[in-house]
Image 1 (cartoon, helix red, strand yellow):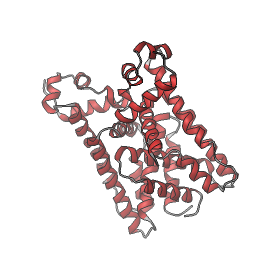
Image 2 (cartoon, rainbow over the protein chains, first blue to last red):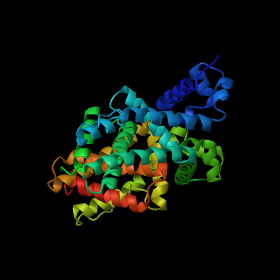
Image 3 (cartoon, each protein chain N blue to C red):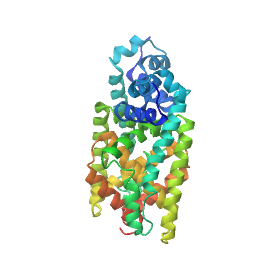
Length: 184
Length: 184
């Protein structure tokens, strides 16, 4: 039976979100996608190839949503909309956040994944820095680093503990943006 | 050969920091500690028992350092000292941060680990809230959530990408504390 790389990547994401990335072996991905191991290997020679491609796809999905923001909106609103894409505020983003966390943890011991993570974080931070800078905000680079860290940390804390409601996460993000923009 | 739970836990940490938590099977932990599989099972019946105990030990180590802070220091300094314990600013903390990230990622799909994470984050957040509150800071709970999120996010971003120097992490932490204390 034929299969597409996208179907296989979705199988990786579903397994990673529910059982952790390490459960996403070639065999389990083949099972979940309803294809043979050979069909997976037709697209991806090794598990590392599959993971690298899957992580790229995941980053691309999140970034395409962030890119749709209207540059005419005030800075504060643009930041809320963009950074909300990275928080587990609904089923889809909760699923993505779980997958993202499993890949980030794996990146700590995989240079191929770390390099994707480095490029992604650098691009996001540079875009945030540009936006802060265009509004004349002082020390835009450190503030951009802290916006990104707060969102990633809220997501990590929420997904690993289940202790935050979506209302609490939204309120915390808005407060962080307010503090970073210098309105304490 | 006899072994102690602490030696086994240290073996789990070393494997988790270098190869990821999933590489820390009972067999690999026994190998790393130089004992038989039976010697590990004498202390821990299952891998989940071992992981739960190890995560508790890890949290305890970090918290014991945080607890040594002098309450006579100014709030700003107390926060820098306490939260610096959670950042990968030297070899020991880098090692701990890698282990912590691997357990946090696993907690996303393990209720036993999520419950330890929830208790730990709640205790840390409550302590931070009390300290902010005692200094008359407005909205101490959200600000405490954001201090914790920034540190956890900086650690996640640093360990998963290798893109931040320790000087950048320290400077970012100090800026976050300054912003949260309302001196923007």
